[in-house]
Amino acid sequence: MRIVEEIIGKEVLDSSATVIGKVKDVEVDIESQTIEALVLGKGGISEGLGLSKGETIVPYEMVKKIGDKILLRGGEE
Image (cartoon, rainbow, N blue to C red):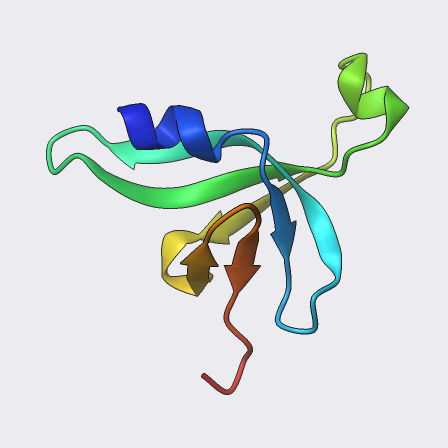
């Protein structure tokens, strides 16, 4: 999926515009060809070297907007 290639590596911001990580993988439902979740890495040097195991799974329903960065919805939205 071309959209997946464009999403990987983008910074993800929470509803208060704080960077919470970068997309390192995307979970896709192969049958429906829809994105189910984003897998975020914490970033930093250890992430680049593959040493960081900290991952955050963000359900795709939490995504508000995708542009140069990915903005997530707030809890009240």
